[in-house]
Each structure stands twice: as structure tokens, then as C-alpha cells.
Length: 398
Image (cartoon, rainbow, N blue to C red; front, side):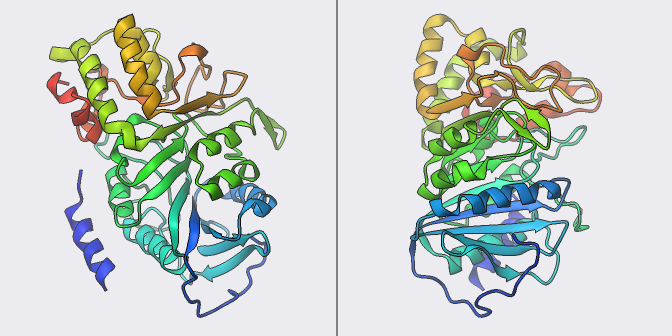
């Protein structure tokens, strides 16, 4: 889904933590010399996650010595406590304010996000870029009883009328920036094949969770080295090493993670469609019994966000499954879950890995008749995704 109005505005645009904030070191900054890498952490915390900001920024400062001198580590932060700001973190200087915005911003507004990221790119140029998106999120799944797709972010303080950012809009913003080495979503439900396929041309790797992110989020002192080195699979390993964890007296049993190689997704879509769609031709609906799911909270307790690998294992013959797994392992080179086989969940009634040997770490949507009942239109929303066409779903009648 393209936003033509957004496109023309973007074309016009492109042509034309501490307790006490201190003034920027340089009130009239000049662009830095080109670094090896600029790491951006985009924290959209103007919502219920404001209380989690301090813990994660403290972890970042704790790990500051892992940021090499030839790497810019930049944090954009907007929460309920203060006006939006950009911080620079380094081994020598710690976390220092670089810019304080005078007005509130809507962090999920496309032009705002683009302006912020373009400014960081301009003043902190680099040969490579990596970005972390930190906030609430829902993956590609549409809002209940709506045709709007939601994705990264939630901004509750600016009355813009658009507090979440849709996946195609996020893609359009990122398409006007240098291609990222990785996109790391420290946000719930983002590691779906539908999201990854939509973003395949703006990043080489995508890291995230197909389920909910634990309350403490990433242990940034353990992932900061991988972030700084552009090591997507290292982000998974560092994140995973922080769980199980106790935070404010509450035990978080685990986190589900994976790394997707977006450069491999087009051939992966072709083989997935060739093997999967025969089971759904003419709107057939195979049983979903045994499908691992990551979310089933809604008015009608629908189950969706199915684990992709488990789903394919239940549907395909042994021979076809082995063929498909060759492509899967190339497209998803790493997936992990904690030793408990569990994850923290508000939106899943049974948050446990049913078949650890078949866990894939990437979710997928499977159309069903029930998704068109009671005012829902999820099958129709699924048709708007790039994955729907690439994986052959339009041939099935769904």
C-alpha cells in the first residue's frame, strides 16, 4: 500500500539520559567526519513505556565502553517526562545531550521520523548504518474491526490523529535513507514474515521477536557491542543471554528471537508459495491444530501470529518440508528461545513453546473464515501485504 500524498511531501522535503538536561556541547554543530558506522536507537516512549526508558538508557551507559571510537551511537528519545531530544553516547563521554527540541513531536508521524533520521544521517555520516526501533508494536496485524494496519510505535501525547505507523509508511520513510545493515525491533510482534518482506529492500537483516517483548526489553549492556559492530546475529545472542531475568521483583521467564536475512526473502517467498498454497486452493481451510501461536487475545479469542516453521511442518510432507527447510535456514539463519521454553505474555493464554525442536522464531498469518466475522476484515487486510502476492496467496481465493 503506497501513500502517494506522503511520497510527494517526502520528495519536497528531501529537496529543499540524564536527570538534568544540559545545553548541547556545540549549539551550532558541524557534520562529523565519516565514521565506520552510525548506530541509531529510536525510542518512541511517549506512552506507557516511559517508565522503562531509564532502565534501558542506564544499560546503554553501562555498556558504553563497547562503542568503538569510529562508531557514532545516537539515541533519539521522546517520552512523557521531557521534550524530545537527541543524545550522543561514547566510551569517553557517556550519554550527552546533543539536541533538545523546543516543541513536542509525534514520533510515529512519517515526516517527523524522516526529519529526525535525516538530521542524524547529516550530522553523523557513516559508511554503514544500523537502527533500533523501541516502542509498542503489533506487527502487521490490523487493528480490531478496522482496515488499518499497525506496526511500530505509539505516541499518546500529540493529538495528530495518527498515533501508530503502518508498515508501508515505515517502509516509505526508510526508503529515503541509506540502506541499513540491520533493523532491530525492540518491540512486540514485529518478527513476522509479512513485516520482514515489506522491509526487505531497506535493510539486510531484521532482528526481533514474533511474540511479546519482556517488560525490561533488551539488556542493552549485553547487545551494545553487536549493535556497534553491525552484527545482527550477535544482537540475538546478546539479548538471549539476558533471560530469564528478574526485574523489579518480577520474573521474566524468557524471550523469543530470530534474525532474518532479508536478502534471501524473495526466493524464500517463491518456494513457500509453491509448497504451501496447494493446501489452501479454492479457499480450503486445513485444520490449525498443532500450530504454535504467539497471540490469541481479541474480542473473539482468535489465535493468530502462528510460528511459520511449526505451521509448515504440520502441513507439508516430509520431503517437501526438508526442501522448504533448506530455504528457511538461509532466510532465517538464527532463532533462539530461553531454556525455559516460555515467554512473558499479556496477549497469549498459553505462552510456552509446544515443540522446541520445531520452533522457528518467525510468525505468519494463515487466512481463515473466522477472520471475516463480527466486523473483522483481517483476510482483506492480509491481501494488502506484499507477502500475500509474493507467496502466491492470491491464487488460492483467500
